[in-house]
Image (cartoon, rainbow, N blue to C red; front, top):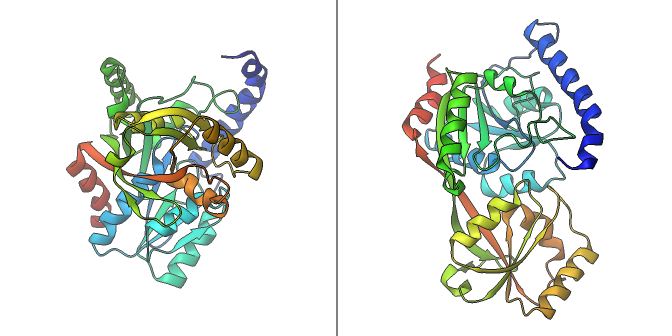
Length: 329
């Protein structure tokens, strides 16, 4: 841990006790949990950002829509990048944005007559009673340095996983040490033996140009000088995904999660690309939302977006059994 993070430890201790007391109050029914007259499913995590939550939300939405369910998605406002991406990718599904998910949930039921609420980033939102809690855990960095924010990336104590119904371990293909993956599974089973363990990977769905959304064949990118641009929770996973495709990455411009790019940032990137003969800049779909209004600034290199999708590689049927089993109760 760096020296600066040591200075943040007192704030993490305070945060830890605030969250712990809040959770105790919910368990003791001192704080009220509100129930909606529909099924409520939460997708969340126990660390801050980068666990692969958004691809899972889209994966689940597709499965539920195929079953004929009427779903509304509730999300918080993180600068509107996630909300816009989810709205684009889940056409026809109502996406309601707001910190008060009890209020937006009631609005979804009344206005859209849905039978299911999908709660994006809802594991710590305990005001709304849910029927299923799915927790994403990044196999490459499951618990950070073990500290809660701000000294670490944990959003609450690891014991909070006792509330989870499904642990979806993401990016298992990016873990080089399989022993660490096995140890993670053992740890999760020890914390919550009743939770279902599911493994998944993120794979490239396609590349497309940001300018006109024309699909780009990845073979056309091989042999070219590539720069990466990302402002996401786990940029190293994005980079590993690109490298696994055999592309020649010369530079990775990394910004904080949900960062909205300024003109001076893009001018600096353009200057580097021109000086170093970069042929294409590859970014993520989340970043693409934040770059659409500024895409003309980077005129020296083709701006390419990587679309990814989640694929469950272990316990997929058990996952669906647990997901759709809530409708039998």
